[in-house]
Amino acid sequence: DYEVGSLEKAWVDSILPLVYDNESSCVDKVVSSFISLVLDPIVEISSNDYCRDFLLDDNRNRNRNRNNGDNTNDIDDAAAGDDDDDDDYIMAIRYKSCFKILSSLNYQPPHQSASSSSTSTSNVGKKNTLILVLQKAFETFDSLARKKTCIAILKEVHYIITTKTIKNAIGDGHSDEIQNNSFCNDTVVGAWALLEGVASLKSYSKKSNILNPKEILRSSAIGTEFLVTYCIKLLTECNNNEDCSSSSYTVQSKSSMNNVNRDLLVVNARSCLNVIASYANYLSFDEMKSLAVEIKSFITSFQLSLDLIGVSIHALVALAAVHCCDDEQHQSTVVATCTDWIKEIFYKCEAKLNAYVCYDNSMALQGSTNETELSRVIFTAGEICMVGFTPNEEFNTKHTRAAIEGGNSNESIQGLCVRPSNRLTRLVQSLIPFTLPNINGSSTSKEVSHVLRAHAFVAFGKICLRDEALVKESINIFAQELHQSGSKSNVAVKSNALLVLGDFCVRYTHLVEKFIPLMASCLQDDVNDKAESETSI
Image 1 (cartoon, rainbow, N blue to C red):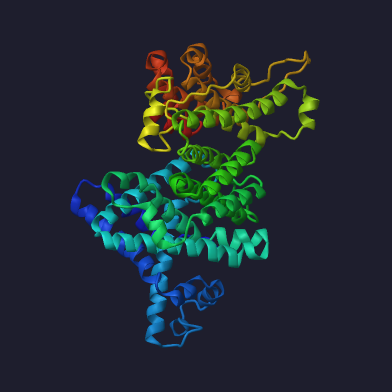
Image 2: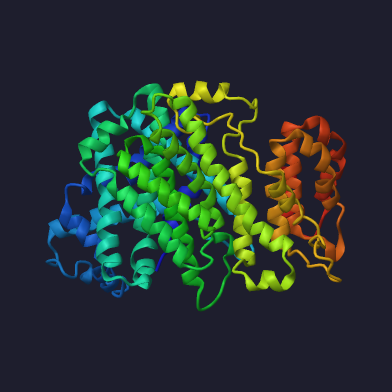
C-alpha cells in the first residue's frame, strides 16, 4: 500500500523548510543532510544493480514485512548473516527512504472535505523547497561531482519509471495492476518529483552554468523518448479513471485506496508534463510534433481532470514555442501557432456551453454533456484566457518579440492576448446566476448548480483580468455574491468570488477600492473558515 513513512514525512515538514532560514549555518546543515539522505543513496545504488533489484522486488519486501521485526529473518533470500548482504540491505533501506522523502514532497494525501486549492498550494510550496535545496546542493559540488550526480539521478529515474512500470503493470495489460503496483508506488512518485526538480533548474543554470541539460541527457544515454511515451500513457490512464482529480476526493471504506491511486496518477502526470515543458528544447522534432498533437487532443476532449488542464496548456505552449524556433519568421510564427490552437479550444468550449445554456432541458439531458464535463469546459476556457498573461502586460506584440529573442519558451508568448468571442464570454457569465436565462420561453428556469457557479466565477474573472471595460461592467456581480446569505450562500462560490476580487485589487485597484470593507467583512463569516482564509490571503 502507498504510505509515506512517518519519520521521512516529519523530516520534510520540520527540517527541510529551514533551507529558507536566514542563518547560513542552518541552511548548510539542511543542505548537507539532504545530500546525505537523498542524493548520496541514489549515486551509490546507481552502480549496484543487485541492491536496486533487492529493494524493488515487491514480493521479497512483502515477505520481509511479515516477519514483524524478527531480526533473524532480515535477509530472507540472501545468505543469512552475510556482511555483504547486510550492507546491501542497509543501502536498500536508505534508497527506499530517499524516495519516501521525495514522494512526500510531490504528494499530499487530501483530507475529507479539504479544498483542492489549499492542497495544491501546499504541494507547490514543497516543490519550490525541493528546487531550492537541489540548487544549493549542486552549488556545493565541483563540476565532476555535479555531472556524476545528475547522470545518476536521470538513470535511476529512467530505470524506475520504465522498468517498474513495464514489468509490473503495462506489460500484462491490466489497468488494476497499473494503479496498484506501479504508478501508486512511492518510489515512482518520488522519481517523478526528483526529475521535475532537476528539470526546473534549467532556467537557473543559464545564469550560473551549474547544469547543462543537453550535456547531461547525452551523457546519461537515456534520451527523451521515455518522457513522450509515459506522458501519453499517464494522461490516457487518467482518462480511463473516472473522476481522478484530487479535488473530488472522498473518504470511502471500500474505494479510498482507489481514490488515492487516481490522485497519484494525476500527481505523476503533472510532474511529467512539467518536465516536458522544461525539456521541450531537447525533444526531437517528431517527438515535439506528435506530443503537441496528443496533448491538444486531450485538452479539447475535455476528459482531463481539473488538476491537469493548466499544466497541459503550459506544456503545449512550451512545445509550440520550440517547434517554431527554426522558422525564419519565428517571432510571428509562435504567436500565430498559439493563436490558432487557442481559437480552436475557444470554439469547442463555446459549442459545449452553447449546447447546455441555449437548448431546452430535454435536449440538454439527451446530450453527453454532464456537470463534470461542463466544469472542465468552463475551467479550460478560463485557463486559455490566461495564456500570455503578465501582470504589467500591454496588449501588443512588443513583449512577445523581446521574450522570443531571449530564448525562453515560457516567456515567448508573454503579451499574447487572444480574447474569447463575445458569445463565449456571455455564455460563461450566464452560469453565474442561480438559474439559466429563459431563452426558449419555457415556464420554468433551469437551476445552475453550485459547482458550475463556482467555476463560472473563476473563469469569468480570468476573462475580466484581460478586459478592463468588462471589469467595470461586471464587478458588481462579484461583490453582490459576498452579500448572499442563508440557503443562497455557498462557501465555494463565495470564496471564488472573493479570490477574483482579490486579483482585481492588484490589477484594477481603483475599481475595487470601494469594496474593500465588504471583502474584509467576510472574516466574520462563521459558516466555514475557507472564505476567511482566502480573504486573509
